[in-house]
Image (cartoon, rainbow, N blue to C red; front, top):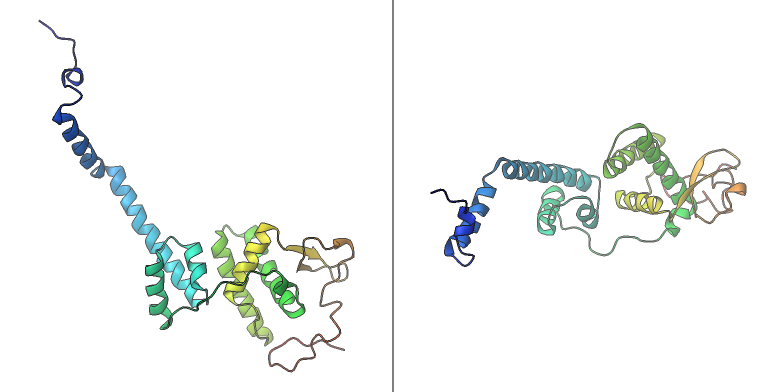
Length: 216
């Protein structure tokens, strides 16, 4: 006689074989090709994160930036930071004020960096953090060529990018020279004049080496 009852129906729900089957299925799942592929991807991702973290540390990024831009654990980032720099990372919170970027000299530096970043994002297919890193290197190179001390640290440049992306700061076009400068989002852009075209009274009067000078 033929039986039309499946083996699944023959085994009671409380039978120990069902528990054993669950364990075996779990083991088999870890041995499948997709699982091995996922493991390989995680190794590649970690390797890429380590490479990116080293590049960020060399640019002067704080530990909080590394935590935000990679998936590495805090302990691993801390060991990596000490290995690359030979010292412990700086403590304290990151700067979180937009006011710094609206001051005369910092605004000029911030505007240069942000214009470079925006140009890269429009012309090259880059991830956000890669665009920030490349823009910062170009910013430092430009400062070095001009003999000007760079005011923006990498961490401040990274924070500026976050402010810009969140709309807490915007780029305004100067009605005098036509350049784009970092500005408050509530500024009247119809009559905006940048700090280069109309510097403050005491702007450029300092004697610090590498500072901007206002020509009279």
